[in-house]
Length: 254
Image 1 (cartoon, rainbow, N blue to C red):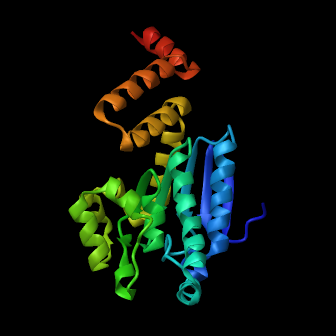
Image 2 (cartoon, rainbow, N blue to C red):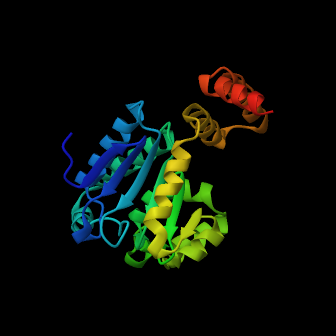
């Protein structure tokens, strides 16, 4: 697939996916979402990919839905609107089920659907001046699909305040809420993100894949079922080549 709204590059095991509509603050439209879905799917099938690094071209990560699209959606019927919303839901599910870690590198603003896209990633790294928020309530809208992820990422009350006030929060506040993982100075952001991504990409691909699958699949499990799933993954992990090599290295060191 030829991409027009995103950039895709795989190098050193890291698939760099860049939202490429800087003139629109990387606003989401159907074409961009379709290209993202294709890139996520392609990277999941590529044995050379060990990590996805998602970022935005220009000053902002993503400002949310394209205003032209919002205007059209207001004129469409419920079935058309559901079909459009389902495209974003499918993207979030693909990210959740991806065998590799997906890391968001957020500079500038991540708002509305853009904040949702960052939240759908497994790890969020932010520049010190970055901002996060769900301002949909200000136009009578709801950040509906992302609530499934947001509710699993931060406390219920913190999530409620974010979506009903529509206020943007600083990177520091987002980290206090548990929404993001690391904050780096603006002038060191790109280099620090590269170091983080390279370090994570060097970890055992099989161990990360099994860990991600087990952790996220526990959402709907009882305590007993989660323990049993852990037993199975424990046994599978021990049989992987990565684990066998890791044990040999550990024994040699000791």
